[in-house]
Amino acid sequence: MKKKTRPDLYQELEKKREEINLLDQKLLTLFNQRFHIALEIGKIKKKIGKKIYDFKREREVLKRLKRKNKGPLKEEDLKKIFTTIMKVCRKSQI
Image (tube, rainbow, N blue to C red):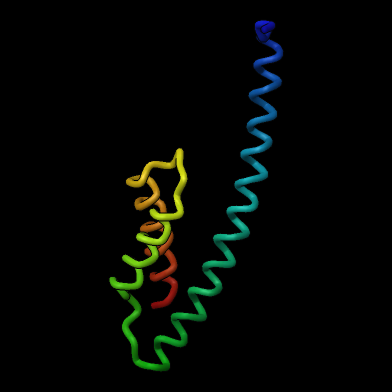
C-alpha cells in the first residue's frame, strides 16, 4: 500500500470538508422543515388546550432514536443533540 503524501492528505481533507458542507446544508433544510412542523403542532396544541411541553412524547422520541441509532454517534450525544432540537422547537411554539 502506497503511503499518502502531504499534498494528498490536504486534498483528502478538503474533499471531506466539502462532504461536511453538503451534509450541513441538508441538515439545515431538515431542521427548518422540522421547525415548521413544530410551529404547526404548537398552533394545534393551543387550539385544543394542550400544554406545549409533553415529557412523555419527548421521551418516546428519544427512545425511538436510540433504537434506530447504529453509531458511531454515542447514545449520550444523540440525547444531547435531540434534546436541544426539541427544546428549540418547543420554544418556537410558545
